[in-house]
Length: 111
Length: 109
Image (cartoon, rainbow over all chains, first blue to last red; front, side):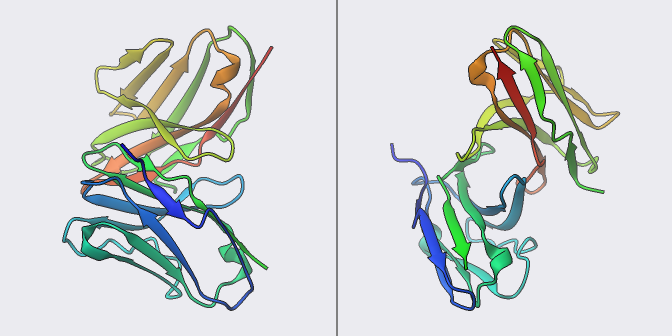
């Protein structure tokens, strides 16, 4: 079956613009995670959705970041008024039990 | 203190060598432990879970020491294809995974 997909694969934007990143999890997976990985760095947890529970937003670095998960499936991560330090690879993962399956990521470059 | 700490490396080893990585975690309530592998510019993928009694998968052996709060990964008979970054991962209730920054391994001919 299909794995986790993310779009776009690459996004170049200008400082101050808003961007939306999309994640399509594996069908039936109840948990969905967003992470950020800067060049040569580890994975930074951003937000976690589990079923119908309130999302764990504890990793969002500022109020410019928000995420939604519609219908328990597709998720969108929105970054408003992008800054250069937002440049990173944004990874989405989904899981049914404990193993997380990652998408290929969206490489965001803020000029 | 970081929740999960790893030596970033790089560990440069010749083919055939045995190499071990350690990882420490700070939350004693952590329940599940994993090693993920991440190839350059690729997404992380699960390598193996880590069980209390220790477990082996081919050339890979994972061990957990709850008392000292560390996890280890041993790779025997290293192959060139083992070159990657190895991420230590800890599951904190409820089902939130915390990733270490990874240990980079480079196997040379």
